[in-house]
Length: 236
Image (cartoon, rainbow, N blue to C red; front, side):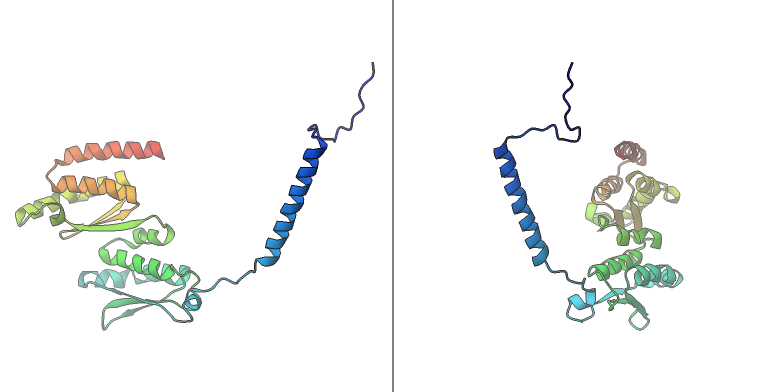
């Protein structure tokens, strides 16, 4: 019995000569195109944020409200570190105008660093903690939405106070429940409510807050938040 002595390293795909010639021509054309693109494409050094504007520096000025002056002084080092070390920005506090002034320098690499730094400081001025506001520097899909209680329902006097109390809850329990269920951060400053999180999470938290303002019982909102948290845990 004779055994076919074939080369074991040869391909087992057999093609006609016409197909082989076509593929050879196409591969040679691709090689020529790649060689042309390699020779034609120049390489440029990345411009800094200041050089991109013709050497001019950009400024941002964020006003500090009176009730945030003391927290700003106590957390100044925590706010300064990410702005200077990560974003390479120049920061100072103008005591005369009571504004935080941010400026780009020759070391600032990203053109969007100035706006990110301004959003970070603005979030702190709204009442968010530095460790929560710094997420705006790390993630691009986070937003802050602000509205007043009277935008949802026209309330005055004790009715407005009770609506704010329903949103906060006893010792802040309702607010914490909404935050944990929707993975957001909520700040209640007088009649203003600020929400920090992704777009979808802010929408769920806003719906819960609006239900409480409109007079929904907290128990019903708790059940809804429990269902929301369960769905989010299953999704992730």
